[in-house]
Image (cartoon, rainbow, N blue to C red; front, side, top):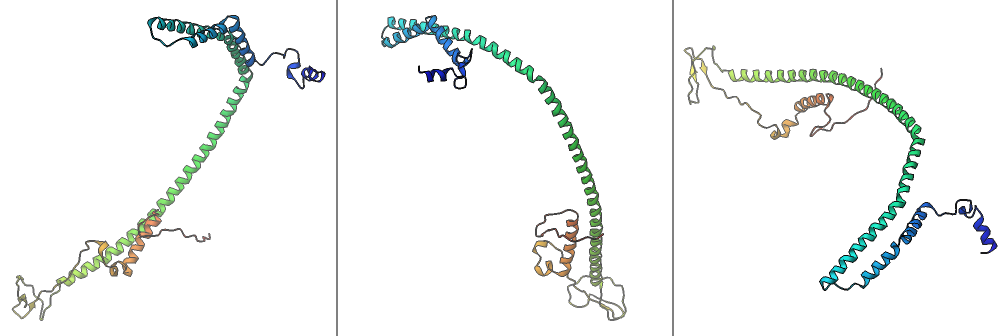
Length: 274
């Protein structure tokens, strides 16, 4: 070794193993070296080499004698493997003990930190629960106010809908009364009399009073809606019909309906001054 090489080898900055007590290999390398030395010392390395050589020379099994020799060599192979495992266990036991001691020491060092961490997490959880409870209360209050407003608007919508129903019912009642009056009209040429009418097929007067009064039949055409969908556009798009439908839809939209077939429901922003 040259002087320069020797100086580098002995310089702790260049060679960490140059300090006292650090000339041994790392523990992971040293334990492998110790195992190899133990196997040599116990004759196991030589024994394994001999077994492998014997197996390499073994012929194919063609007789019971050769099969018996195979059984013997297998038995010796198993014994050699167990011996190697025993040597490994001898070296591994101190390592396990050291690992447990190291783990115990490390746990003792961080025990106070873990306890403090647990307390800190508990405080953080308590604060988070408090914030969550406040948010829950605010949400519940907002829902309560929204429900009150919904009920108020629903009451208004119900009143308007009832008024509209009453108006439409009054129109229908008036129309029905008019149709009833029209159906009950009789044409007379003199004073009105009460007569018992017999149904006949004659086209002439149905009955005639003693003083010349005649009763004739009148025909009144009525209707019954069977299917609204099949009504002609002249009816569905009539101004009165559209107005009535629009009021019913408006009441439902105010009460919270946001989707309806055939209707575009949208929000319109305005300005309120109070």
